[in-house]
Image (tube, rainbow, N blue to C red; front, side):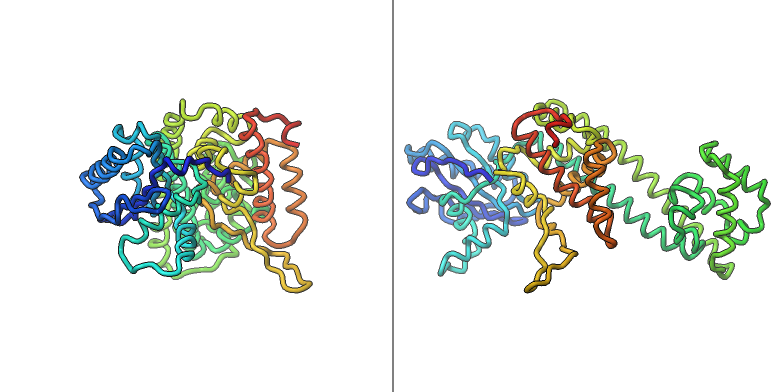
Length: 427
């Protein structure tokens, strides 16, 4: 990441150790003199106002300070209110106050550089202030409430998609118990292209057992499938044949199990339907929130075929400014789309685990966006197919991850130069 230029001698360095109920604040000058020494305050509105007053008082007494850097560890949501309050403080605004949410691991490693520190609950506030004092901050400052609003929506969207995936996995266990072949058949042999579609749902919930499907007349089953699919299945006769064959090949259960399993499966379908409805509402809210927010970078992202407005908003919410990153490799590391070495001597392993140590939300949106771009950019489709054919294990995951890394290079290049996508620039 790009190094921040600081006039060290005229900067007040503030560190805040965040806790669920209590925060501790320290402030240092460049000579490492304490101007505020490990003062505990409540993690509440009154405590934030108290911090503001303490920093303002130091600034009024020491006229050499022109800027204020405030650092706090990014520890979940406990520091959100403090960061938002201090970054918008009118009292601190004349001093170009910048608030930074720091990576706890970086602060922890820096703390090890001290040979001896007193065991004090607020010592981390000093370490954070000193971390800023020696120029170790390389992130973008807190971006304010608008970005936070967008980020809460895009992160909640990931939460909902994870809920849908988890519910489908759970439901598939019940489907296997009731209709084993339906759950296990691969795509080419399966009656339905979508195991979780409306027609599949109707079959799994309207027919109590596999025997009922086997015993149903072909004409009745064809009519049922045509009705439930609203004519979208082009060959209902073939679908009926595959469905009855799968039912005939499936395990049989005691009759007392079919009704509880059917109720459970129906409940899971209802949950998935509710989640998908909420997903549409969240997507609509994301598009409303992103309007006018960093329009240049949002326009650049939307120029890439297939990326879509929602994925663009998700990337923008987590990425902030591309100027925070030195190169595409730094961006990839921040996402966690890098691979750990798994070599020994002359042996080099084919399988290498992705690091996944970075921002998981940004990683999700970049991988999803790359998957969509594959379907719209011939160059990315060819690259994906090439990587897919290189191995026999984890083909899709490996090819998608490597394509995502290629996509990061495109992303960085376009955003760094402020250029719109074109096939020539992508090459």
